[in-house]
Length: 237
Image (tube, rainbow, N blue to C red; front, side, top):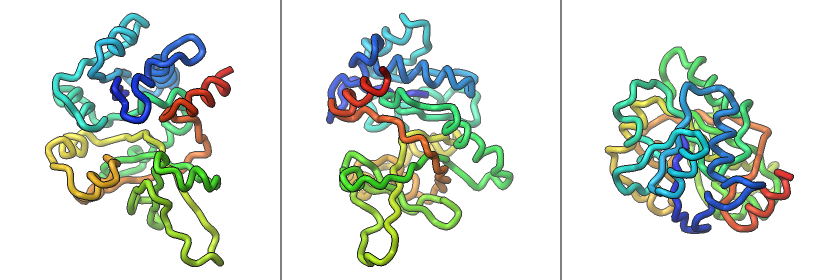
């Protein structure tokens, strides 16, 4: 499932921007399909423009009936009547989505014999100080089993002791959910931490869900700003 809002706050209409001859959202859809990891791939959107773009390209799309604040809510509405076990959320602004990273997330559930894990997601190590300090880059810290402890737009951990090596991980916006966790998310109200940070993954933590993080070496380019689009266009060429 690829949630796709047209009116993104930081970069409106970013998903319809041209990326080497096709809109960003179409590139992302095709990248997800090309992994050949999924039974079905859908774009879930509130936009007739995005819906028509995917359908006209031969893809599958679902129009949201309700207004939604985040991708998890949008996907929950779309899958509520579907007979599925695991749902993967690929952000619409990630046209460089790769098979290896997605396979790593899915393998979490194959190895979860105790059904302990509610969600799995991706993280990539970052060293660039500008990226570490950038509030558009969501950081994550994990425990010794790589379960998420917290997500923040601020640099975490804070480098109080400068003798210890700084290790920072960026949270990549790809999730795999058990359906029950996703449906729980939809009915649970937003709490203050999520509202303050504007990071939907925090809601799962605030209600005791367990998120297993998988490290990937593939950073890719998420298109949050016009500058990101320029980087993506250069990389695609």
